[in-house]
Length: 339
Image (cartoon, rainbow, N blue to C red):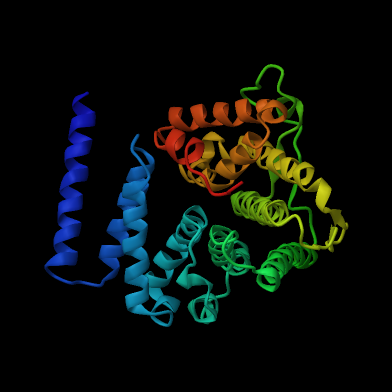
């Protein structure tokens, strides 16, 4: 109990120092960004709402914009930018709002002196999706007031284009790497869920933690795009949408939910790899966004998805046991998709 009190006191002191440096000193330096990064990580270990984390990420985003993309291409600022960028883009997904990180200046210039990692390269493709989600919300909010025939079809096509871009990115990356990036493991799950079909499948194993993060987030982005396509067809049933999505394996719109649940299961089967002891907190902390998207997918049809729901809730319990006490809030209560 005493340790908890001291931890909260230290946290409060850090927040006060951070506010002072912003409000009084008006400093824009790497130490300030590093402090925000540390406080953001602390939020993951505290059983609080998402509001404090959102505030930290908003502040970090404003600081990066104040620096500009060229300053973020070198030195410690580039290192901090690379660390914050996934958090900022995933937060844009959660809030369903556009992000400045989708503009060409921010996808290209920060990586002009150092090539983007596979994760950063994937984010270049994904960063535009939150703006499409925001546009979808705007159209659907006014659907009963105005006719948006052409605009709705254009948005539908843009989500389809995003799905094609994600698939092409994966195919190009697999071709370049010339090796398997993941495969079914012979290692059984540590905590199988009785009666859960997912728990009886072999966990997926990866070449490294970067690949695990790349694929779980790639699948999460695909699920979101599929959900947005599905949402548009359901809210505008009189429109003549194409019956198929032209991926490498043509997907009938009627089979979107089946495809989404298959991707959600792939995410679940990746948890064993990311929750290994040698991952420390980095592996477990990187599971939040894809795990939350998988959980939402299973919740769409609770009768069919109850096994997946139980599996995700079991993973959240393991995250809490590892010290990430924010997991129940950030994974089980936040909502990225709309129905």
